[in-house]
Length: 220
Image (cartoon, rainbow, N blue to C red; front, side):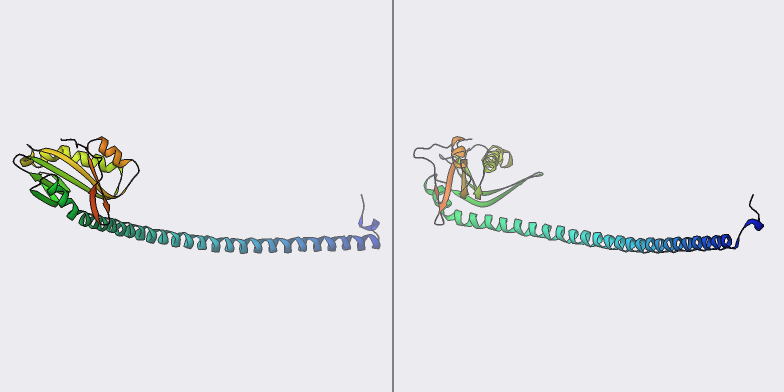
């Protein structure tokens, strides 16, 4: 066992120097630890700041999304309104020519554009409804479209089938349908004719029947 008497002055100086060096290392590590803690605190503050910015951005995006939805809804209504106006415009162009066709070719005595019927909870509007009594004894429904697609065929046939229910005063009359339009989806006119519907297309603001010569429409 080493005693104090055995320790030389050189040994003591070496021990003191070693302790001093150890203290310096401890101080260095403490400083590094303090710096790390400060960095972590700063990093936490930066993270909090970025989280707050992210939350603000999300709220701003949600607000913008809500505004976009409102604008899209408004635009959809406006476009729908334009579509309706164009439909009315088309019917207005069609009407004079259609009246001539209905009168001269089919002998119609009554021609009613935009004819609306209500019976109970049911309601139906016909673009043009025409009928004649006596020997002719016929009712004609004309459906006018700016662009004619296949769905218009089913719509017109449904109107022809349901007419006696909605207007019993016409129940004893045969019924035929005319599908008229400005622009036609390919193949729709031929399909309509194959089902017994007459077709008409606009040319220079005049509607003319486009069925083949000798075509006989189906009578419902």
